[in-house]
Every structure is written in C-alpha cells, then in structure tokens.
Amino acid sequence: MRVVWDMSWFKRKSVQDERIVNLKNQIAKEAWVLTLMICSISVIVKTFFFMEKQSVWVELAILIVTSIYSMIRSVRSGVYSDEVEVHDQTHRFSMTKKQLMIGLASGLFLALFFGFRSAYLFADGDGALQVKYFLSVFAASLIMYIPFFVILTAVSHLVMNQLSKRRSDRDLDDSDLIE
Image (cartoon, rainbow, N blue to C red):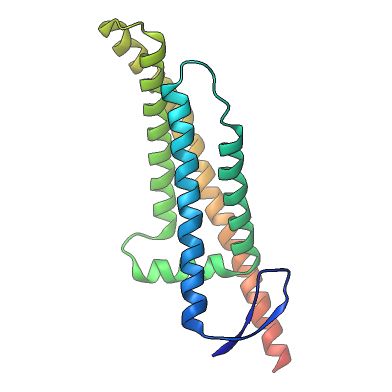
C-alpha cells in the first residue's frame, strides 16, 4: 500500500492498493490506444472511400494533441529516459534503432498511401496509367518523407531522452538533499 497522487490537479488521495492503481493505469492506456486507432481508421476511411472532401481535422487534432501531451508529460516527469534505459536492457534493438526503423516505416507507409491514393483517385481505371501514377507519386513521396520521418523520430527521441535524463538527475539530486 502506498499514497497515490490523483491526476485531478494534484489532490492527495487516500491509501490505495498498488495492484488497483496499476490496473486502472493499464485500462487508461488501452482506452488511449483505442482512441488513437479509431481516429486513425476514421482518417483513412474518410480519405480513401469518400469522393467528396471529408473533414479530418478533428481526428488529426486528437491524434496530435494526445501524442504531444503524453510526450511532454513523460519527459517532464523523467519517465522517458527510464523507459528507454529499461527497454535497451531488455530488448535486442535499442530504442534509437527502433525510432530509426519507425521513421523508415512511417515514410514508406505514407509513400505507399499516397501512391495508392493517387492511382485510385486520378487514373480513371486505366491500368497502365494507374501504375504510372502509383510509381511516380510513390517515388516522390519516398524521397520526401523517409528523410523527414527519420530525422523527426531520431532527433525527437534523442532530445526527449536528454531532457528526461536531466529531469531525472535533478530529481535524484533533490532527493539526496532531502536525506
């Protein structure tokens, strides 16, 4: 048993069972992932299957804001560097390598997405024209998006890890002063 701080603006709660707190955190994480999946599927369906323009701004705002919020919270609390350290000790690939692979995969996925989308929407059913549109848009998207996503994921990971390490070290220094 331990004292748990509630997220509702730092009000102190009574003593709670750690198992219950961990289960509640797991449920919240699953709900967050489910929300992100629903928003992503909504963006894909609206983009691919509706010929008239459908607004996807709300879904994109939800995806971006929740991601940025969780990133800031984990860095400011110093948890991000601890997660990276634990991950690097327990997995075959380091978190940095995984971030590079995620950047490559994101760029490739987006290039495929735009290639198929342009072939589907603009080629008017002509097979040769569809292949031409796909290949030209796919190649151009690869050239643009793979470097962008690799740099974005790798640099953001390194910066977040450094900031989180500083925060964690500062918290350790503060706890040494208290003792």
